[in-house]
Length: 160
Image (cartoon, rainbow, N blue to C red; front, side, top):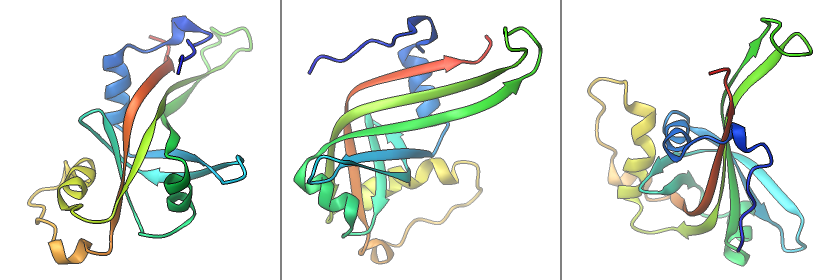
């Protein structure tokens, strides 16, 4: 597939900035395709590791059915925003933001998910002291979605 360039290329983040935005956030929107071709988007917690997006989920459901039928997905992260009322913009105010769009193929994994779930939980517990290890028996009913990133773009208007 030929990927489109950002229309406002001056707002494009570097790869490093894009990855930093992914690492510093834990929520995004997963978009899949329904069998009739209509979109289905759902908020998901995620972790970024090894050029992949890792999410946990139940073993059945709408998004799972869609991924099994067509594994092409889009995942979007909004990495914060702030309102600038300095008057520098023509309107007198501006919204600063960072966002990342990811395109890739999703894999639904039901078995052997323990190591992936450890990667998933790491960003959520990184600032907590003495976090106990996950109990492998407690995660038996949990599945994982892994998105192998084929293309991603980061965009920012952060006033810097």
